[in-house]
Image (cartoon, rainbow, N blue to C red):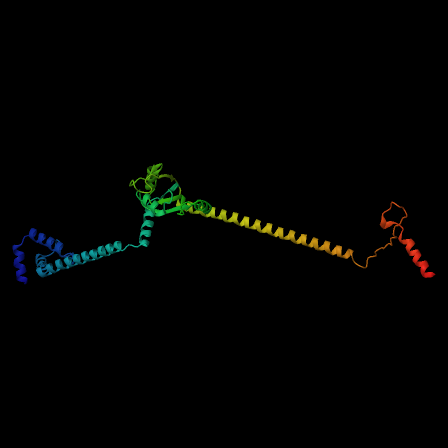
Length: 308
């Protein structure tokens, strides 16, 4: 083997050996070439021997196959990951949609629009469908009409469906909210001519610098004010009821005191003066019959008769 390598080194030039060394290093990426092999002062025999050892075709082929196997394994892993991603996207749940909207909101500035009037009997799902034409709508809130208004409307034979008075909508992108306000404000909804809401006009206003947290804080503040007013009215009614019950009790005690006082005035322990009244009699002819002195003569005659 040494003789063959020596003969090979005799017929090989410096340029040829350098080019062959370059090819060996490029093909065998997995094995490192020692620094003493590429030293310029090395012996030609050592270089030729090393070249003969490292230029084994089986070793070169093995390095190539290892590299191909690594590439194929990486490709299979990528295909598996792509398959998993497609499965996840196909089986997306509402929770995934919410998380997707949350990530979008982090990447973009949200915008809020105000709807001062809602078409009659329009539901939030229909309003979301209309607004979604301009961009992704995250949250939507429509305020229902007052319960008293609903009773008055239904008492007169009106429609019993729920009506909404005003609303707010939050877009994930601010520019979508501005575009929606500029397009829909003061214009009809449109769509098919036979649709129920074709000719209804929307009043939409973009609220600059307004966030959804401001709306929730405002609603909570209004609820607190309403609750405080209700508590004040309840306390006032309880106070009036207590005052009325107190007055009734006072009047009852006064009445009982008067009755007891009247009863005590008729008590036997108190001295009563009695006077005997003599009968009035007269002999006048024009006097009434019941006061004429007729009975006295009769009584006197009866007494005399008894004595005699």
